[in-house]
Length: 265
Image (cartoon, rainbow, N blue to C red; front, side, top):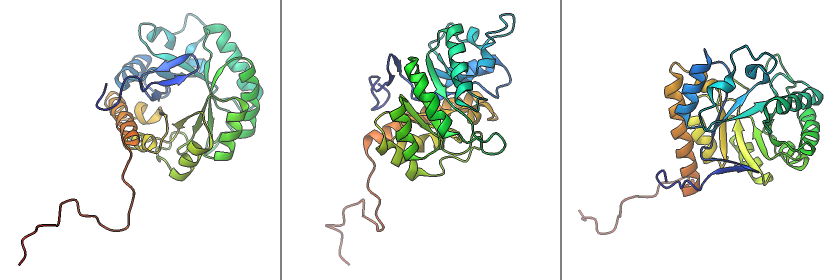
């Protein structure tokens, strides 16, 4: 137990269980050793990885997989750099054949120039096919509750709405939509993209998200190891705050100290 958070409060996705509700990325680090050190400091048990970092076509090159062999960290393969459903499907099938990894982060990008926003139509098409292939799917999408529901219907095991554009560090730009998505679907909601600091992660969890994924905020921090640890505790604090139940917001003050029995002048 951590404070009031029981270890039974695990994140479950089909056959997978994770004690940490923080998912981290593997990009933008100076080297694989720093990637490993920051990941372990974060307490995360799931790290996203693009196929190019696994080097399945060249066994003589440095491989990220080797750095996590002696840990409890699982790899979440993603389809970064894919722009069509066919590209994403081929990428995941190839990766599973080479590594056996069948838990995936599905992302199909629609705008590679400015926003890196997802192409939700291609994402839905890919989701339907990959589900039939037996993958456990976490789908990166816009913060649109209608699309979130369509992805759930297409077979997504988790919906990953963006907080803000990837790598922007802007934090959650539309808290209401995250809450709407939480209400719209029954599957897990994981806030992804745009997290810039630990307070952003805490806010996401307080809104009811079951987990947070962040990469740039840790990898590009002045001290990635320290930021990774900050994210660890932010996610725990946010989850505790959500489960505790916050007080309602009111326009006027309510005295916290008793007013009865005061000395009369």
